[in-house]
Image 1 (cartoon, rainbow, N blue to C red):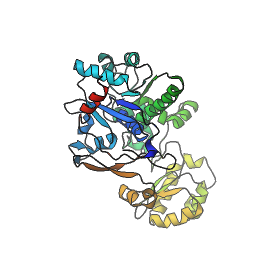
Image 2: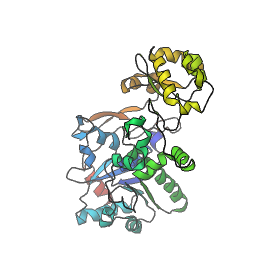
Image 3: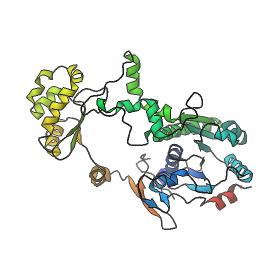
Image 4: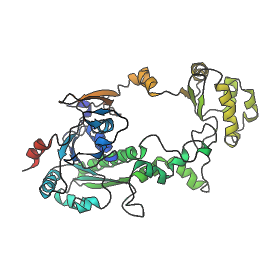
Length: 386
């Protein structure tokens, strides 16, 4: 049972045929906003992410990843190779509002559940397809996996120091962004449907989402002679930004410093060696490694709190770099109320995050943990098998 804050999509039924991360992340956000999400799973094991472990921790027989991204959903076990099960799935889709699928191109067509086929059953349905690289081109049949999409997108060349080579994100950023983009498209299509009654086919991919993530720096690249971005060779944090932008080790932790005039840092930190570059904005990029090394040497002489007391008082954009224990114990995090415990009737209990969106000042909350495989099959069949 959800709080009133998560009722914007109440009455809408989402059929989620996707696996792993991108599609389930999309349906999770729709659930947080009040939609009913029916997760389609194989009877023999369910979503493959049930066994996709991020650590050796297991809760109720499933991975913490599966629990995190499937809390509050209903599970319908369907054998897609069984004609009777497929016929029932079509009945379910006839009464649904949204379908999400992230099969490799060609699979959904073989099942007879591509957009045009489902549209014939339910003309007003909002149908969302998430792929690795789109529906055409030489990469279509390549595995649509997050790390591989990062590798093809160019995004790895923005991370890390220059001599490191490509550095991937430490998160499944392509999956999450694709899910978020699909969710945006679904919500827009539902608005139009509410006005005209017309459904839509929403399509996005991991690659398109990663390209869009880079829109700011890619636009610079396209309009400055297509020069390859040059990462800093020391404490790099952004390929296109000058010193002091970066993270610096102090005696007892790390200090992040964003865009700040070098002359200001010279005065505040007492670094006379910065004097040659004090007022030369172009030098802050051309000589950024040299400038960063000078700053790093100074920051390393004191603790983080010492420098924060000086820099924050002068309204310099800076922050201590927090690890998870520090974040979770901080008042800034606590006041956001971003954590919750979800439970299930079989005594499964797991701590996880809450929806990042607040509605009229309230944050949606889901109290139920992720389902076991096929947990709701009997009830859903009785409801839709007419």
